[in-house]
Amino acid sequence: MSSKPDCIFCQIVAGAIPCFKLYEDEATLAFMDINPVHPGHALAIVKPHYADLFATPADLLAATTATLQKVATAVQTTLKPPGMNLLQCNGPAAAQSVPHFHMHAIPRHADDGLAMNWDLVPGNHDDIAALAERIRANL
Ligand code: AMP
Ligand code: ZN
Image (cartoon, rainbow, N blue to C red):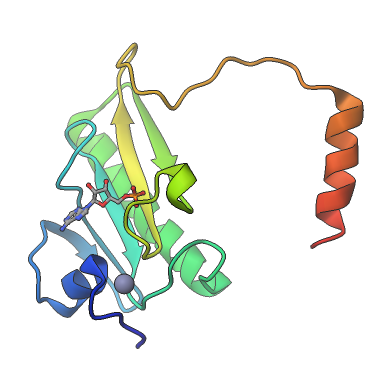
């Protein structure tokens, strides 16, 4: 399994650094985030070292998503927050601080001030269609 010695999540997978473990299977690990946005903030990570969404093989992405669903469901059952966001960051501009693929389950509360919501402002359909065509060309 690929591992990066200076990666904090690889060290957690290896057991060299402790975590508040929630769940583990062959391909994934889930644990509590130590800087929780709200109580119950949890992470699901892929065990081998892949930096981000773009580097992670699709089967491991699916496995991480399945683990996140399990854990998010347990958080929901335990804490019953009125909302929950699933979040995944790629690159410094998207606020990715640990370059080892992971997904967040973040309980949410009304007006909690978390700056992750945006107003629904309709886009220009011609612009959207043109961009969709450019993106499809890269699929
Ligand atoms: P991101 O900004 O999407 O890369 O998220 C990385 C997350 O990992 C942050 O929310 C950190 O609080 C969390 N984190 C960093 N180190 C640890 C650790 N040792 N145990 C648990 N969570 C961690
Ligand atoms: Zn790693």
